[in-house]
Length: 504
Image (cartoon, rainbow, N blue to C red; front, side, top):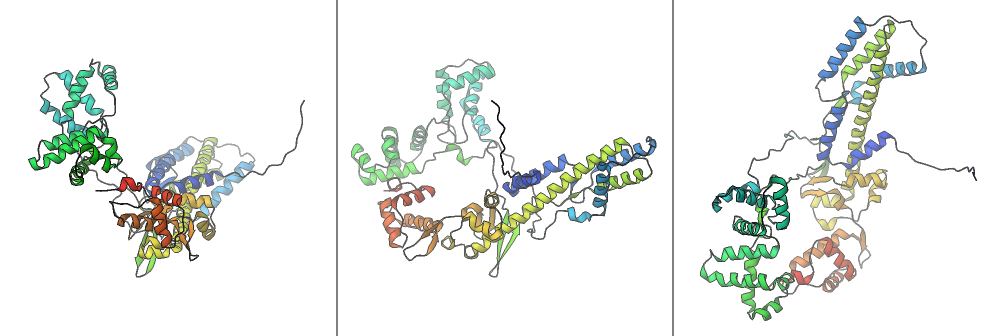
């Protein structure tokens, strides 16, 4: 049975311009340059700096030639509401100050450096390994191809994490080469003797064993005992070593603490990631481009925006000439339908360019306002660089100061960086919850984490502090927090448990 209901709903919808602004706020300065390039390519009405768009110039001349040579006078028809609206738009745009649609601001940092970052041309890590294939003196070209397939399967850390069966399948499908397990094992054993030591290992244990074996063959005899002992520890008691069960190792191997210490010192000199010291073109280097710069000028903080990736944008002047040409032709009854369609297209592109310039301008204003409020809120930190002077600060605090929505502040803080005299900092790292001390003072959790880091750094590594002991030390300093909170902060700081911090 059909029923008819009356319902009332309140919906909030974002305009296309607001959506565009939200998207622009989320991206950092390093990504903004690419976004602007995409818009410049998509919209000929938008231009950068003083450059002129030759394609638009050509389109303008072609349009004028067409209207002057081919157009035939038409009978004047009553103007439609759409034409009145278009005439008003043209008059308004022509009378408008063109400079109002130029993107300029005075709060940018002076930055005349080149935008491009030169990258040295080097051999890749895999090419370096392939060059060493000549040392094997492989007569069979088929074996050379198998060896290259193995090298190509080594990851950027220097490990071979693919099973031999998978490599055999790759050879079969890609190069139509039949290989067997014995050939893969033999060639892998040869490659594992290449430089750097430990390359082509299938796990950490094998990586350390290979390095210890190669090192024992080259060092003086007095050091070989420690290296051979290290081989036994890694080969037979790797689990106990990784968990730092040192007393068990002494008991199992019937050795003194000094002998164990010498062996472990040799193990700690090894490289757990053999390829880490070699540059690889397959690995993308990520450069942090700060969005803001804060400079201390004789006690006064000066905030500037990074203008490197935000060029001066404006609407192409040629489009104004096109609109004026349309008005002249219309007054002379020489306006044709195709020309009107072209003007409507121009209007669409101009509107799109205005929206984009306004969105970029709003982005810069919003970012500056937000960062300025953060700078004022954390003024003592930016003057001294002392993390203990960071105040508790949440998104709502900055939203209340700026009058912006919390979600907007969050978008600005996400993936943005500020360059200070004490290093380049991530904006979201300045936000933290508050914690009350025994004296009733509100302090930032960042302050507690800094103190916790200092305590652990100064502890006796032979007897590192447990989480319970760390809790008691913090309480003595006036920070009354639970043991599980200490454990949470320690994990957030990537500090291992006491057992794994223990040293001989």
